[in-house]
Each structure stands twice: as C-alpha cells, then as structure tokens.
Image (tube, rainbow, N blue to C red; front, side):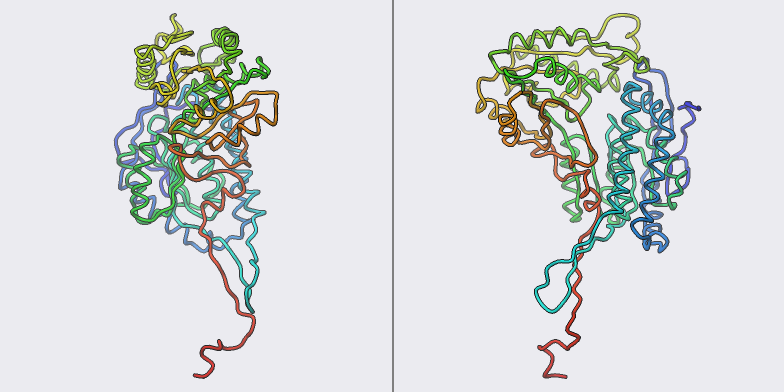
Length: 496
C-alpha cells in the first residue's frame, strides 16, 4: 500500500484537485523533524471559489430533492471507504501529528463509525406531527441550512473532521472543512475517500490555511450559514463575536482543565490506570485531558506514590513502535510552551514528582518528546491549575470531603469533562450531577460514543455534537400549518 506523504500538493476545492493560492504549509514528522510535505495552502480566493461551488451544489435538485435514505447512501460509502483505507489514513496522521499508529488507527475507525452512525440517524429521523389547536394540521419539519463550515484542530483531525462533515452532509448541506495548518494532510485523505464515494462535486471542500486568512473569510462570509469550531477558547470567542454580527449559529468545543477525582474507596489499580490514560495518552494533547487530579486526603500519599511509580514505567517512544504509550508532542514550539508551563509551576512552588524534562538518549534527540510529568504542592488557584497546558502535565491536589471537592472542582473557568473513581455508586451519581462539566466519566476516562452528545460549559464552549440530534444541529426547524376546514377564514367572510 502507498504510504507516501510527500506527494500532497493539491487541495480539494469545489470538487476538483487544485493548487492552493495561499502561503505554503509545511508538515514535519514530530518523531525526528523530517519533512512530510510542503503544499500551497488555501487563499481567500480559494474560499470564495469553494463557497460558490457549494452554493451551486446544495441548490442542485439532484442533491436537494434526495430522500433521506438516498443521502444516507453516500455516508455509508464514505464510512466504508475510510475503513478500507484506514492503514494509509492512520500512517499519514501519525506522520502529520506524531500520534502512535495504535491511536491513529482507532481515530480512523472512529471516523468511519461516525459516518455510519449519522447515516443511520438520518434514515430513522422523524418529523413531528404536533398537537393541533384548531381545525388544521400542524407539523414540525427540518430543512438544510445551506453552505456550512467546520474548523478542526490538529490533535485528532480525522475524528474531529468526521464529527462535523458527517452530520452536515446528512442534514443536506454543503460543508467547507478548514483543518489546522499544523496537521494539514489528513483532510486530503478524507477528500479522496469522499471523491471515491461519488459525493456530488462542490458539497465538500478542504481548505487548510492560516486561521487569520482562511478561517476569517469562512466565518465572515455572508453565504456561510453555520460554523462548528473545535479549538482554543480565545479563538472561539472571536468566532462567536463574528457569528453574532451576522446572526449565524455556531457550535464551539473549546479548552478544558478537567478534574479527575479519586475517593478513598476506589479500586486503586483501576484509578491509577484511568488517571494515566486520562492525562498521558495522546501525550496530553487533548481538550478533555484529566489535568487536575483530586485525591481524598486519607489515601493521598499512598495513591500519589503508586501513580508516580506507574507513570515512570510508561514507554515514551517512537509513534510507529507498538509498545509506545507516550509519543512526541506536535511541534518544537508547542513543546517549548509545555516546558514554560512547568517552569512557571516550579516558580510557584510546585514540586516535580516525576518528569519535568525531555527524555535523554539518542532515540529522542531529534523529536519533540517530553516526559510525563506530575507536580504536587500547588493550590487549585495556581497558574498550573487554571491554564490549559495541552501536554503530559498533571497537577495533584488533596481534598477532604465532598463539599470541598465539588467547590474546588467547579472553581475553574472551564467545564468540559471530569472523572470520578469510587465503588460507591450513589456517591458517584451525586457528585457527577454536581460537577459543572459537559461530560462525566465514572470509573473510566476518555471513553466516547458517537451516539452520546458531547460539549462543554463555561469557557469550554456552547452547543453539542454527536448523538441523534447531531444531524438536527445542522438544520433549520420549520413549522407547517395545513387548514382542514376548507372554508374561508371567518374574519374575511363578510367581505366575500
């Protein structure tokens, strides 16, 4: 199978492969810094062309008049295509992001499942016959929005891409996809699959490029009817302001500083494994990373010692090695930022229990590796516990009782996710309902289902994606009234 990633030199714009007219984008392999590809990015003119083609495609009767089960056929084909090409997609994504092949294959299969689920949701979606309040029939129906857009992050592109593209197409829209310039290659693989599936030209375009140019044009263009964004909170705020000016709906999945909670009655082996997976898998480059750990004071010392010992046994290594658990960070610039967060924590009085440095040895010298890091001795109001690090850095804190725990956990600007470890189900339920986060995991972490809605509260965003309502989120609701009396309205009767 061809796994060459250096042949990427065109973008999929309006259903055709074209050279982008924007600035060049460079993709490097985080494991050793070697060049993957340099390709011309998209320009404002490319965005405008994609929108023009999308408007034509979405208004074409051959697409607009398709019945739901006929639209679903395209999504099933895309799902099958992603599964068929999963080896290549996972290889390209590992080269692009530095993630392990194990993880990127799981992400590819997740994307395949997303298209399959959204196709099934579309096929079984029902309009509502609403209770009549008179001699007329009333219905609530849904219509496509038109031309829409998804803006996705660099840390899990194929899965994030699918969570926006699949429901947008299922809803009958056209969609422009703008991936991060840090991981531009995977969206081109998705475009090849979509082209192979025979989706009408113009309904899907890929536009990697600078957010300040490509993203700005997409968000502010009057023809774009919805934007779904996953990324940083400040960028999300900016998108929300621009969307408000044109009264455009948005979905924003933003940052996180998620608390993980270990009660004294927890299964400690289960909790240690879950805490490590929650923060150190994906090298901590995850919006849902469990980066604040609260441990009940009675077991704090013993549990943290057990966690540190297990963390030091994690395998930091090359993303193509089957035994690797912690791969390199995405870019040198990002590793520098992670190191800066750790330096601030030290300056604030934090104690490095393990990690806090780059791994030594020739295997690591050319890659952007960083050891899994655990830091104690800081309060919940410290910079490390307030700022999103987006790396393998965990702050550990004790708590005394449920009230103290809930107060500390919720005392944060973010509200994306959280985790609880306890054998006491009523307690788990009670605390889960009290936590101000969009997702709560109980005795597990970072488990996902496309059938379950996902999103955050507070600075972690607005709106929900996934689930059966995930398709409705890309549609406009419409009410229909049909008179049954067949008589002129009484108001006008005397004038007839």
